[in-house]
Length: 192
Image 1 (cartoon, helix red, strand yellow):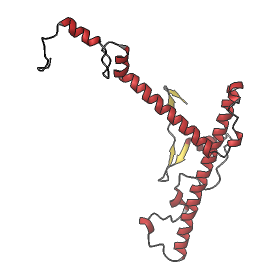
Image 2 (image 1 turned 180 degrees about the vertical axis):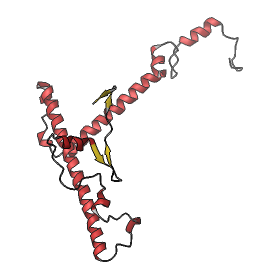
Image 3 (image 1 turned 60 degrees about the vertical axis):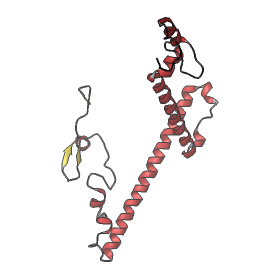
Image 4 (image 1 turned 30 degrees about the vertical axis):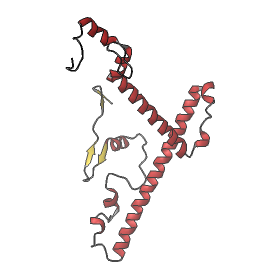
């Protein structure tokens, strides 16, 4: 009770009545639904996460629509209500094509960058500049140094189901040139 309160101290019944009384521009009284709603952290967390999740889905959706090269293959929106499974299946197929297209473009950019580094390396060797290291020694000297032994540079061998092909799939060559066996995957203790 503040010292400046003019009057006698409040009785217990008056204090209880004050707890449930609604005052303008103040928090609701304790025990009411609005008090619980405004002070519950889980409600606020659910609202915040649902808003953020919905905004991220909208951004991904809009980005896909603006950047895809297969926009003409997407079904019209009104088709969703007539056959939703076909609509979602077509949408998923177009999205898969979109991701494969992006992957192919990225691989082409990386291949061009590797070729550019090789051309610069050949130029440096042809003009007697191979002893000078540019960019802190980051210039490639050969295919092996550029790509490493674990990345194939030629055509991939065909997997015809022979025992040798099965052995090739279970082993790989690491960066130091050693032939190493792939670790066996387990799922709930079961060998895959």
